[in-house]
Length: 136
Length: 127
Image (tube, rainbow over all chains, first blue to last red; front, side, top):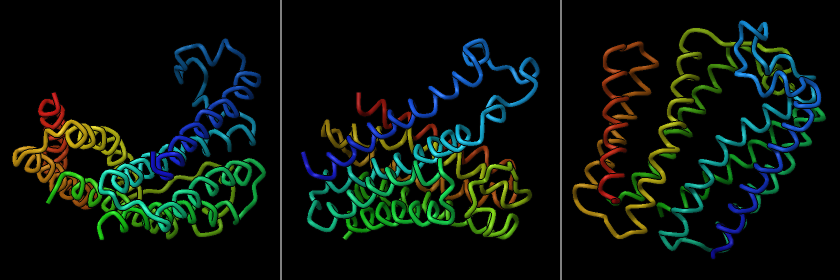
């Protein structure tokens, strides 16, 4: 297994952790009566996401954002590995991505603005660099 | 051009779409809001909103397309037909983003269908 694939596995596990971090407070705040329901807007009186506390809603958005990041990163690691372009540079990029996405969660939850956006940019740039490295 | 190269190019297409969507959001909502925690829900309109929907759709398409390409490569089923299917996907998705941004309604749905169909063909080839 290449180091990039290790980073990908850890990033996927981070997504599992992010799920738990969001779902546990969400269920405590809303109660299983709402979360286990079909979440029909007319019955709940709006979108269920809008009923969360500020911090839980931020964790929800952080989870949502990582889906986009993760799918691009998954492609980047796979093409680097399959194209046999794995090296020091792509390894550094992969771990920059992983640590950026780990830091992104508290940055969003605690409202470290504008650092959250810069942290996001680091992960995004690392993924783009890996995709470019796969082509050359 | 291999399927893997096309997948990388599609990755770039999504990145460019994201950057255009972010530019639109920045213009309409302001940099201050984007850098904030966005606790108040603000939405964009017009071309920025269409780019946001096009981006979301492109990510859905990517989640389906990437495993298809990886399956073809890992199972050694790559052929000129599978490369063609991947090329059709890439062109269709390129057309899709433009068609959404510039409100070319019929073309958008046609290119979406072409993209989905070529992804489905890749899965059949992998079998």
